Length: 149
Image (cartoon, rainbow, N blue to C red):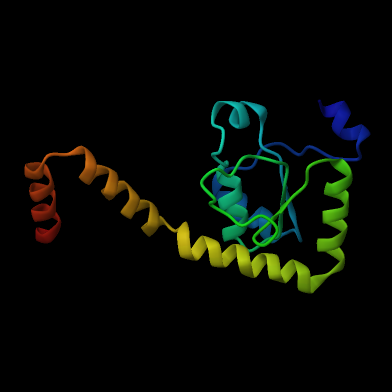
């Protein structure tokens, strides 16, 4: 795999700790997301965390295809899909050559993250699941504990 990357003119520098991901994004003008096959096949329709991280960090994102069945993001508005190598090169050139286009992707991506994908949104969703899965007694008890906190 490393030889294939080198042949393609790419350099592998190892993995990045999650805490360092925002710094890595901030050091570049665009990011490319290529979901690994086990995620695409084992969790169809569910993006990896990198989609959320890149958009939240305000970097233009170009992604290999994945199925956004829940319409979490707006392809072509928040980020770009590249369905093959030629399209990936075309998108990279467009983003790198046109600062206004890159800025529009950043603005839209941040808008979607802030309006639908913050920690508060996930907490609200988890409490919704909790409400659906618990008895009335547990719900009242949880609410009372929260009120006392």
